[in-house]
Length: 129
Image (cartoon, rainbow, N blue to C red; front, top):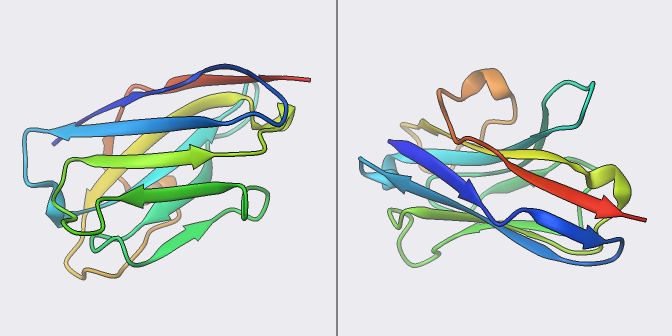
């Protein structure tokens, strides 16, 4: 599977963006997925993750209630994962990466970047104050 992230851009504080991650080259229904981000001079950090089934999600505390990760609820094999971002803050500025990994269990999630072996190229989100 290959991943292509898109949807980043420049937005004012309080605004919204939707990031998209398109998978190709394999059956995406076997994969759990996640979004990570890396700000300048900082390490890559977990933002949100979702299980193969789409039924289990988790978020880092600073985005809980503002961000929503999703995939097609009717068919997790659909090749898209989204990150809906509302109430954006300047501290959300970063390059956002989507990631995926195969998962035997349908409801397992993975919150560490080391757990993922497929990465997209990143999309830049800049939030101005």
